[in-house]
Image (cartoon, rainbow, N blue to C red; front, top):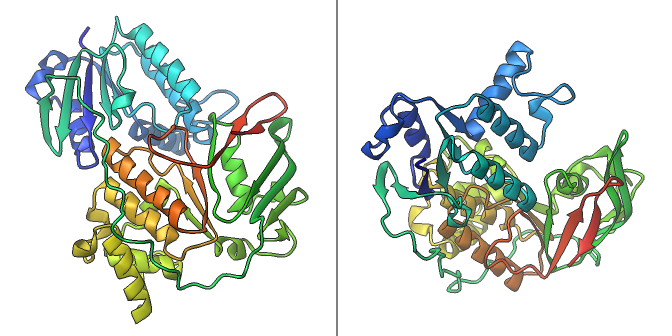
Length: 408
């Protein structure tokens, strides 16, 4: 069987390639797949199935006990893969199959794919070269719309050496209360939903300037912990949780808490689908708005100019945000979360779906935040990102009694 990997960067027209392939307009190198039955293992497929199940109130790949929409990302991918394999296609296109999956399930997925590789051809679209499946025997890359074969598969990982060392992190123009340590404290926190235990005796303290990575398998409780810090999870009330010196549920509003925290997750990018310039995107981080609807002050413009210079984007300041590559959008959004120099910065899977070079650039920026500011950073990721330098790791280890937290 012929199996392909096609390496992507954040300028690759992946959607166009998939669309053309399904219409029989694939590059000549893929003529063997013409008139054959194919399937797509992709978030696009999951979105379509979720929509169909919701509209028609029927189960397609949902189980008796859980709908597709309420499954974790890992459970969704597992259900989708088994569904596609059961249809016995000639080939399956794998769209960044390991994104948002914990290491254990990545290994399970690799084994499943390898076991079927003698009956089904796989065409893997990969942003990370380390994700390449072991049985791949053909290599290519997609440069915007142009596909080409890679003859030599022994290439470097291509990590950027950029470290943003030429400009310091701009100063804050927002004045925060003089918070004392700890900024966040969890003491023997236990969370359950009905009979399902999620967290078991979590003890975690975050002080000014700390740099933490929060890790754990899919479903281990990472999102639950974040929702108790940044969200309005009612399960937090009655627990021994302190945020900025106040016990959770002692009268503060969720907006009071959010005002002291910078937060970014890739899904937030979809909120900014209007015609916002890069400059206005960063200024909106100072005003906590989706878009800019007030005239910025000279001080705001001066600080944002420094941020644009730091990101090497000043020449593009009037460029529309939604016209940028994924990599540049993530840099802007990460900087936007930090532009107020908040006491705490939470980055939730910020490198998911990024190519190697773009991810390395973002990691360099986060390391710079840690080195030059007293903002406490919580970096959430399934991956062990090359070059990331957290001081400590809180690893959630699941059990029947809920996940315990191991500090490394």
